[in-house]
Image (cartoon, rainbow over all chains, first blue to last red; front, side):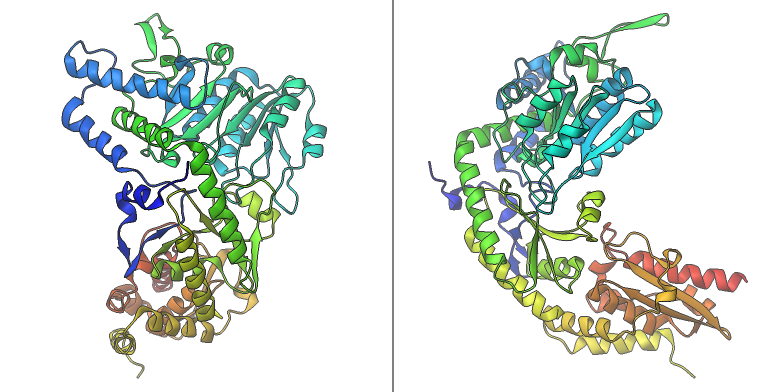
Length: 406
Length: 140
């Protein structure tokens, strides 16, 4: 199946606009993806027709809202091939999901001297929650190093693994440089040493096929807004025995079975971890995003993205003084680069004047930037709705910007 | 008698009025950035760094007579261009004048986006810091 990109672009209203006098070129998809009209419509339809609080009301609106909300859970389950819907916990985002695991699994399982392995590629969201619980519990964080290409050092990982490692928390794909980590192999190795594995799937969910059972993942987290869905919704998948053994996270409505002043019994999965009225509208709209991706075929989307990556890598390599940061053999369509003698911020400002949105800075991975000895990079990140023509315009604008700055 | 803060702002507005398109404007700004003398390394201290900018920005202030003199630097040349204008407008004025200054020229020359409160932009913090120095000096 080949994609009709022209037709696809028409599904994303935001793409059709002028920015600073030029047609918008949106290359900041690793920060957030754009939303198809069906997602935007689902949001407004919910508020216009079905708005009600879920799970408790007996009336028609409450039933419609509850059904739509729970249908999303089922679709997520299918999308990542989880064994059952009640292992899909709805959160506020990847960050929320990781904090949940740190504060429940971590609180129940880490003790003094236990190790948590993270990698040098991690986003601050997959560093700080572990530091917080490690400090509280006296656990130790150790870091899997990366090589010059931005590839994890698996030999070092093997050496770090021992019986004191309780959890390995790594991203599936690096947000800053696009490296795809060999998580299947890493999970096997970790399990052989009795460690559990949490995968931060923020950057992989929209760009790789995810099968949590085939990969034998213990915890998997992602955000809806990086999957063409709304902001404010995240997912935590966990193995049943782990989720059941974990204490609740936040207390409140929905997560309880019975409350008295003498004590409270907690609800079953997944509600045990979903205190309070959730983000109903955005969860329901995530359904539309999943439907959209499924209807186009993931295969075709990924093929288009890899074509963009190959073409952009080739074109950018022709620019004198440009160095691509992150040259792993397995990458998603993310290119980080620096140019000799030019600060990334200057390029970001000028490219914006050409209507081009890229990201500049440290990308919330300060330890990784330190590893490469850089204050930051420019990052162009693509999605299937981007085109080769946009890459040509981007490279042209980049050359012009470099000329202005040199 | 040096010119007033308002006079310098009017001068800048006139200079930028000569440019028809954004590229000329930015080339001028980049040029201003390149021409601003580098801050001496002794002043590039952690204390002098302005927080909240994507590039590192350093600001040094000292009192000469009843005037405050600013020197500053940045790793990014466009930011440095903006800094150069701020120095031209505010440096060599009294604390009172700096505290009272309404920096309307930034908006008038079409650079107000550089004052946006995004995390990547430190110009707003730069202006705030210059005024803070003025406040601190006037309290002494």
